[in-house]
Amino acid sequence: MNYAKRTFLLLALAPVLVHAAQPSAPGAPARPSAPAAAPPSAKAIDPEADRMLRQMTDYLAELRSFKVQASSIDEVVTKTGRKIQLAAESVVSVMRPNKLMSDQIGAEKGLEFWYDGKTMALYCKANNTYSTQPAPATIDETIDLTRKQYKIEAPGADLLFSHPYDILTEQVKTGMFIGKETVEGVAANHLAFEGDEVDWQVWIQDGPQPVPLRFVITTKTMKEQPQFTVQLSNWDTQAKLDESIFQFKPPPGATSVPTFPTECRAHR
Image 1 (cartoon, rainbow, N blue to C red):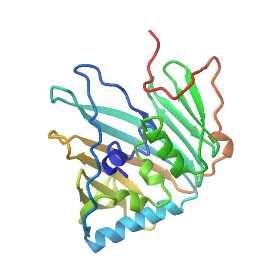
Image 2: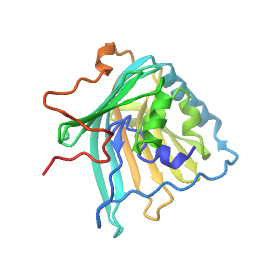
Image 3: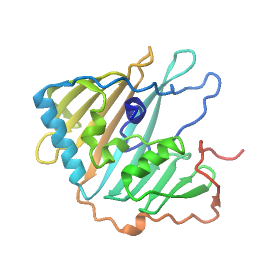
Image 4: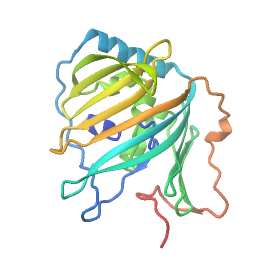
């Protein structure tokens, strides 16, 4: 499994939980192709950092249904080396093991994604088009399918897997506990991890609900080392979700397209 591809754009449980890859125009911000995975290496994770990370991932895996809002800053690099920061906000609803809905809010060109255990749907607000496709039986399989077959990256999706610890530490070489800090006034434990292709940091809420509050991902395979940052807030870890919200209903006048789009923009 390619760790850089799975975690660059990581965590948004957000900017859509589905962010369609867009082809680069000359001079426009461009994303690098993910390099081949490096051979596995021995991990040297500080025991306290490992304990806190496991506590967080075990807690997330045990949540049966939840909602979270994510505000992300995705730093991309133009062909001239200039860094551009792209902001996005999303709300994600999850019901394990096989239901997911994500809505990119406050964006005219936003995307919405539905998965109900049998079918997945992607709706482009900008041009009022949508596509529905057969889906596997679990969230894990659906995330993998959208990445491999439709080239859709899912920031934050690594936290939705049934075993998120394994995914997050796939190519980690070292990890350490930085210390106790605050994120928007909330006490948090700051952890930092070094990998072959990316370094990443996470701030985990201190106390009985160890949810992630902030992630910072640094891509080391580019000399500019762009970062992806996401702030996670308004966690509802006992969300009362009706199964009907995961079933896609085309908006009035929406046009069906044969496959998931590679970009979402208004018609000219």
